[in-house]
Image 1 (cartoon, rainbow, N blue to C red):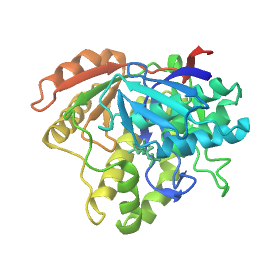
Image 2 (spheres, rainbow, N blue to C red; image 1 turned 180 degrees about the horizontal axis):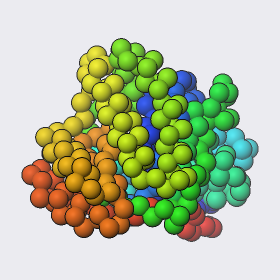
Image 3 (cartoon, rainbow, N blue to C red; image 1 turned 135 degrees about the vertical axis):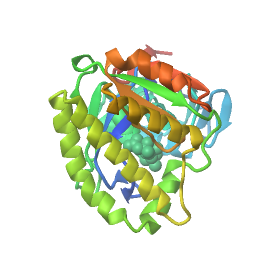
Amino acid sequence: MQQATAIAHPNIALVKYWGKRDMRLNLPAVGSLSITLDALCTRTQVRFDSALSADRFILDGVDEDAGRVTACLDLLRAAARIDTRARVDSSNDFPTAAGLASSASGFAALVVAADAALGLGLTPHMLSRHARRGSGSAARSIFGGFVEMARGRREDGADAVAQPLLDAGAWPLEVLIAVTEQAAKPLASSAAMAATSESAPYYAAWVRSSRPDLRAARKAVLARDFDALADVSVHSCLKMHALMMSSRPPVLYWNAATVACMRRISALREAGLPVFYTIDAGPQVKAICKSEAHDAVEHALRSIAGVVEVRSSGLGGAARVVEEGA
Ligand code: DP6
């Protein structure tokens, strides 16, 4: 039996990925830039077993549809020239599918574990490419620190991969996650993306304007320019949510506490604290700050009605194997 276990951390996009240029290969319509978190973690064991007739995917103890897992594993099986099915056991130490990027860490851990189980020794570049098939944001969770994901130009997606931009230790920002809802989100991001690209009137402008955002964010990260990164990140976040709201049917992930957090964080920044927010396909708010602002931001978020939990995280490392062998 070939088996291995890997862990991966979720990441949070500062310049957002939203929209696909190819559904089948899961190629993004825009590039993106993210930070990988250290506090949250997905742990995934992959066991190839010739007794299985289909892949099995067990997430936090519950059997789930294995469709996307199989699509990802097929790429690794093809590389290994085998046909053996696998049992995948995965667990998250944070709420699943509630806008905390569980699919990102999940598919990153999956491909890293499967690669080790099969003894393939793929490069991080290839692992990122394969993880993308499971979930676009997963391509970024292969790496730690600040990560940039390319839109790519090729039709086969060979250049739609992530690469590390700056190590976590080189600019140790901190993240506070205000959880405003524990339940799973009503609409998965893939479905919401499809609705947006089909019906949002601003979609072409979103795609067109992402390139300068990416350039500005990359420059800000490399220069450790917090204000410049804050400006472009908030802009990208609000632009993505405005796009979703403009689609038919509309997609609105926020609740009252989401908006209260946004306002409070903006007020803190206006008062001089180095902090800004971002929000993904869910109601949780992520505050990104310099360490000197951490305690004040945490205190402010905890005092907001509707915030059920505040989690702190630093920037984390790459996806990695933690256990190998039969
Ligand atoms: C809002 O990576 O979950 O978090 O490729 O369809 O699996 P699929 O989408 P997914 O989308 C992430 C969207 C986002 C922004 C981001 O992470 O860049």
